[in-house]
Length: 275
Image (cartoon, rainbow, N blue to C red):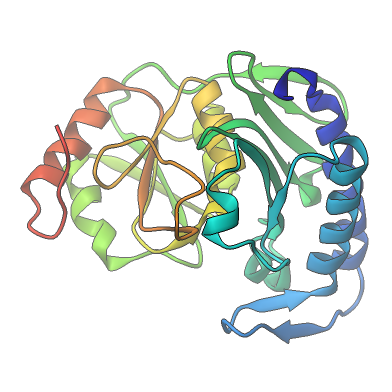
């Protein structure tokens, strides 16, 4: 099934959703609702969801879909899935509402619990990042499509990117273990893309995320040469019984950074890591 995938089709679907999201973003005002989990919801979330779901079902009707704005199948149904789509129609709704441009549209294909394909669009910048296992990662704008690569050179000051809206105090110890850093804040899965294209060396997140928040960005970072692992030092996996992620590190692939973070996790009484 995955042999028939054409990432260009997914990029086109995400681009179409992004264009509609941008139209709503550029309106003078838009309605904001509150979901049951006390998170915001806008018309852009709904419109993007509809476009993506229809597009995926049209081209790949046999692949199931999990989306933030849809009712999710239970684990008894999901545990037999070999592959499925993970969709976040508007990642960074808070950033969308703040109108700072740092929101994304995310689509990933999960194959055997790992991200196989990922597309992240930044509508406000008219930029799309995409990656596929064993085929690399790319950045597409209005002018060109170019391959991207995570940083491989150790810098005197490590560039750390953190969440603009969800930074956690629990992250401070891990940050201190990195030594001299330059810190940048950004919203949504844009942070994965910073690591993927070499703008940042580390993105760490100790607060809770959902699988659809991370899958596409993880795919792009990993296929650009980066690494993503959970707080036990294992690859970040998908289709868990719970769709929550407890925490993770995305790094550029530099061994020095990985060693520092793993050493911190071993020594911290609140965290453990398998060796």
